[in-house]
Image 1 (tube, rainbow, N blue to C red):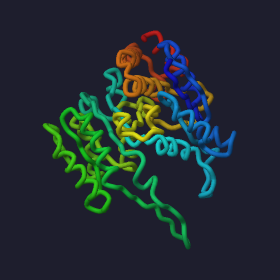
Image 2 (image 1 turned 180 degrees about the vertical axis):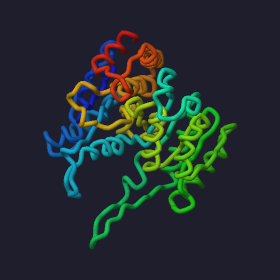
Image 3 (image 1 turned 30 degrees about the horizontal axis):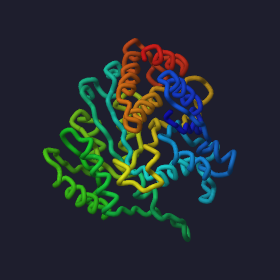
Image 4 (image 1 turned 60 degrees about the horizontal axis):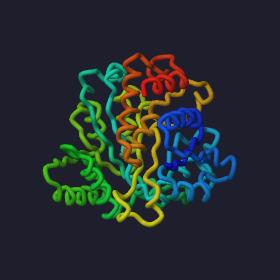
Length: 350
């Protein structure tokens, strides 16, 4: 029996997690343990991630997370616990340094994107984002009326994420940086070029992040794998979400070393953390209008990348495409289908 730790989190998280657990039950072969994280954990335990939940995640085969955060826990007090700390700690402690975000608009949603159909048709790209370094994890503080956040990257951190990007590339890796300004980006470019020199037949191109943001909406079908550091990847992957018509459509995977021999003992059992790209959407929590499709896509990624059940992953993705072709549209896609409607449609097409 495959052990999954499910972290519903906050906002619409419990609603879309309930839908995901129905899908897992339909597929069969899973033992699921639901545990709190984020704001729910702050309310119950005073911290966004407890040691007990972290230990459970370490010993699970995979972790499925819905969403964390909300205005209830917003604070300008630097000492106050924040829901996002739970997610960042999970990635760090489980050594999940690579975030994979596939962007492939469903044929049925080509007209749902704010971009013209002919511009996004044929788009099938993967954003590979470094997750555990950079400005989000650097030294930060306030002092005498000023604030600072430090961006730090080592050669080893850059090399390992670059190897992930080249492993998934079919024809080209586009490395995104700000090498005209930032020293960390200059090191990034040097190391990526060194890794690229070891590859056979995979093209490497460099784009400055501001240019990459423009090219992503002007010629998205030209991209294959986009390799980027933590903060740039956070921004660009959300921009890429709109190619699919809604951020409610994008799943993601956070994974570590390619095999157990490359990982530390504490990381070997957990094969990744899988979550939708969208946030907790507290404004619609409890209304039954949340789109669960990105959550279902995250289940598919968990099954494919974490559990090696490719056939089941294809079943889920095909069921999503068929449901959309039949006209399923949740509120974020311009329709009125509820979370329950969408769940039933996917299960019916499974």
